[in-house]
Length: 231
Image (cartoon, rainbow, N blue to C red; front, side, top):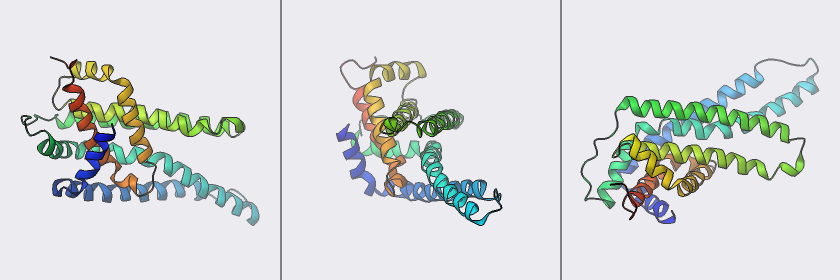
């Protein structure tokens, strides 16, 4: 896995990747600003108290809630549009490291869209449940250390599966992709967890979708070429 991410990081200066990276960064910033603005408006648009002191306290709490919700939702909105660039990122990685591969037929746009919508729905629902659980755990201090673990575990699983499916379906039929995914479920989860961590690191999260996509191409090819590969 370290080799996959190292190669992905080293290719960020590739002109083909840089063009996509620029678009991803702009979209990520736009998503971040939109998420922050929308959540802040929802939390602060209504005056809930007549006392100025209480209103100020509510504004401060609303600001903190905005920060937390934006931090939760940012990985969702940045990864939801990965299908827009995935094929070009994968093609650039394959051209440099796997020139023996024939040109990929890619995946139909509607299939990529369905995968992204399914992913978006799952992440929104599971993260909403996770956020609710976190609010309940505010009253259980010993459970605090487990909160980040739960966040990265849930999103690591979802990210790993989503990125793998989009990469694998470029070259395998759905049945073969499922079998390969099940054979490497543990490694796939670890790769997704690293991606989830990167998506919560300030500034790194702007390039994380491209980085994780490139790394997943390397992981997929390694698994596909392993001795137990599908035939």
